[in-house]
Image (cartoon, rainbow over all chains, first blue to last red):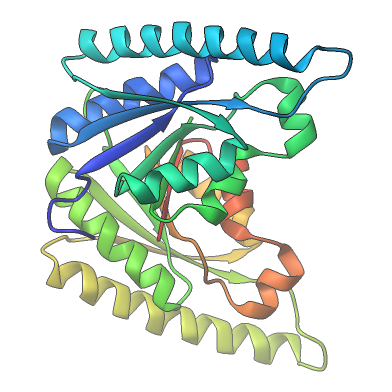
Length: 141
Length: 141
């Protein structure tokens, strides 16, 4: 373990109650362990059938912005000033890339979330992240 | 998150370097967050071919005892007095039952470990634990 334990904690947010629960957990840890919080929303590029790609991207970006604003408010209410990042692409790959780039020591995720359809299509995001993550990963129940 | 964050942290140990790395990580957290540490070794009952069941159980119990002693020493060196439990049965099921019974708030595991053959036979123990665990789970890299 690094000397300062968790310098930077990455929390992927998808708007689900599970991701906000994970964020609350991460904020508690951050306060106790003096860590920074980085909140990330990834707009998955996988296109559901019968939707216009541009229209869909627009909806996702709008939802992402709203979700990140809610997440920022939750963090600030807990006394943690977070850094916010909005990304587009494959959820797992973008989170892994971001964790590397931002030198995060921990990723905190909810066990469920990331949308029922996406879970069905992509398998469990938490499990995939656990396998691919460059740093330790905390799955919050 | 519970008010005292992690009252009791369960660390499953299988003798691999990954499990001892997870134990060191758990000890650091325990010291910072004032948690108790519970170290568990589960002798998997799955019998490799061409081995006498009694002989195999004897070998496993002996290995478990030695592994737990090593784990206890590692914890004590880190300034943490652990509780030690040796179990027999299915690894994931026994850990989940133990976490419930002992009211653990966190399970800390290494990403790899639990033996190459068993991993091949049983799939990823960490992933299964992540799905079945009654509490949050930290996968240490």
